[in-house]
Length: 349
Image 1 (cartoon, rainbow, N blue to C red):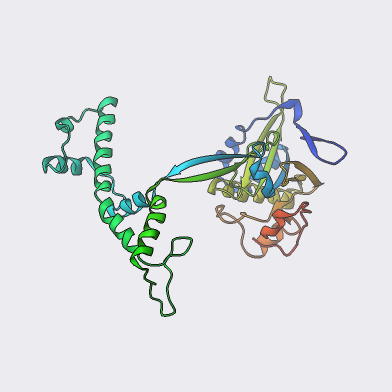
Image 2: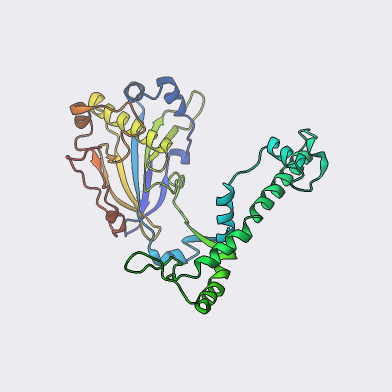
């Protein structure tokens, strides 16, 4: 079973597994053998006498001021289309041309293009050449909209706009016209912002968790790790450890969360085999903190019955997870400095 070595502040420093082994592939055979049914999965684990345990990691929101620190966050700038080109693509319908449409354009002499478009070999060079021709045609189609759009933009600038560029209306809901001089001044002022490419900034949090929690999907606000530990294979000395990772960020994570939470709860109720659970928080300062642990199995109270459609219904479902659901769906909880993982018997999913 995993071991956590903590300092005097109860912070998780090192997480160790038996023989320092971490293997993720072995448990896939269980899922294949039992067709993703939690009842069969729980039975197989119980009959084999495998050891089970789980870890819930709740990810708090990164402290806002740390988004400016490259140690905690990677910021990447990227160029977007200008508003002018965006409007032109919208007019054109964002339509990229098929081979047949390109041939019709060439045959109709709409554009002066190289004549060997009809050579349809699949060589890399020819495919790249054909793509360049399509890019050239599309760009020219887009550029043809520019004069009309610039005239339209100049007309829009003859009315008063606010600081965000939206038209200001009077009490009757009509646009407020400007004098010729004011309209020209506003046009010259707003034109660079209309024709210039825009720059966007993307900020991605840097996660730094010890294995196996380093397998973190940034879309998840929590992840639950379901461990199954088995004896060594014949002729080998290392125990086998498999972990399945549930969460909220993708359909696969939600499926895993529902399947394994049901399996661990099922084996506890029907086979009297508890999977001890550790509760950790990856806090607002990117520190992985130990909160508490339990000798009983607990599941985070999200994503248990969405993608996993074999979940129980009615009273049986509520009894299966009675006293085992922890966590909260309230966003404000993820701004707290601490989180208690209180069990609420009234929790439903």
